[in-house]
Image (cartoon, rainbow, N blue to C red; front, top):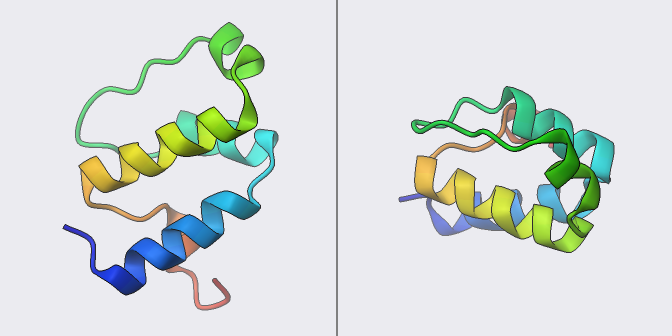
Length: 73
């Protein structure tokens, strides 16, 4: 389980991401289960829904995205 400060950091990071950055995260995120989203899905799904899905992926994987681990984040 991610600690509360990690969850807050994750939520802030994902909320600030635009579609292109979020799609890149989906393509390169190292989850402990397969992520297989089609280009059509990533293009047509609302940005808010993609953010919600990505947060859920991070929580399930118990891993923050690489951007959240940098000192500037």
